[in-house]
Length: 238
Ligand SMILES: [Zn+2]
Image (cartoon, rainbow, N blue to C red):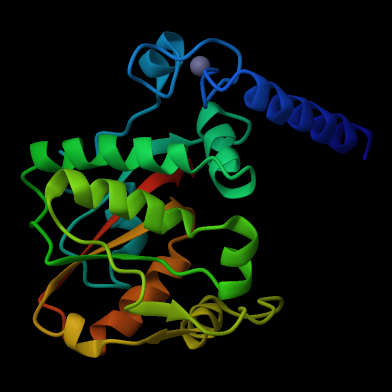
């Protein structure tokens, strides 16, 4: 309880510092940003990038193996409890720092272009969040990431194709397949014509168990896409 209170005070102070000194690194929030970057030189050098863009069988692919038919999957960064990536995603999701999503999307776009494992998609689809959550957050963080990525690879990102129409009901006491069905029931497809026969790139923030992505794939597959690939900002270490 005490440590949570201290953490809250610390992050409020960090927010105030950011407002006063907007040139502080978005990741460590201590050092000044490097030239033309959102992060300091130190953070730029110690970003825990994965090798997923170049390794056919990686954690993301393994997570979804036998559960969803995906062409390729990758996470840009490794997510560790208390680590720099967690801090960045916290800024993006709860502190309105959309620049974090933009810079990660930009980096992911450049990695994507270097990778021979992905197919250039026809459309980028973000994992949706509920409208109420979007109102509080001001944006869907996955859309911010997807749009920045799309700018680099020359593909549009559309958050109106796959939507979340209800808040997910409690997952307590449910089996994995029930949980996935539960998540899937809260999503719906608005424009099936945007999926049929198309190469889809589904984007998310952090892949942990892969359940949300599996639910999204399940729904998308009902509308006969040509292929589905997955790209996330980070993957939690298992
Ligand atoms: Zn830094």
